Image (cartoon, rainbow, N blue to C red; front, side, top):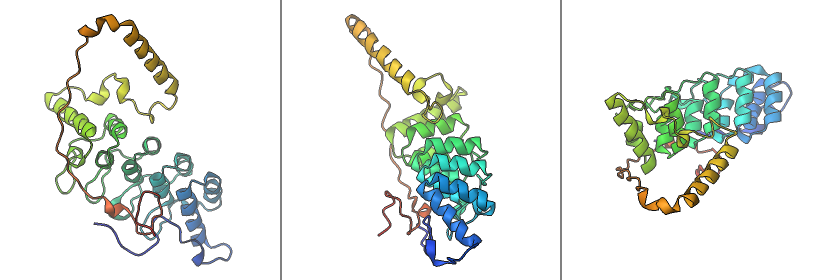
Length: 265
């Protein structure tokens, strides 16, 4: 399932070609490198100096935005989007930036991509959506966020699998199962309810304080209500779901050098 088509990958093959001046292709590679490493200053400078580099491709047809999204560099993603990078551009297998970000669980990047026009329902050649990638890789809060933003929980891959089918994490499966049941009953999805546990960091970046206050209030309530502990009923546990494993090796290049990719020397 892995794509083993030559080198290049997400990394920049830097210096081999045209070390002379004015090589547009070399500038393109430099922007890929800046995007992947998170070098915001370099990315900004390169975007202004050579706008055509914004949507240039590496050997796996990835743009700088794909690499920044994969690596989770939200400030670089903002920079590229500000300079009008194509947020819907597809790499090999029709994988878009939102898919790369969702596979890695980068909620802030996903939020920025959606704000810049990316489609939450976009799918790659195998039918995987951002929700499939987030669910398969156990990113619960991102799964909730994507559902809240309109992701289709019934969308199926070419193999007929929904996000629930490909998910491995019990909590993710339980949440998606609850969503499916709500849809069947015609009720609102769990992510649409007023529940602070459903709010992600991506939606509320300044909520650390409020979360701390909520915890404090909760502690005080527990201390103050110790006498009434017999009246508190334990919440019922959601049943464990059977796990299904699907490989995502086709997203990773052999030359990728991410710490967690594990395919580089």
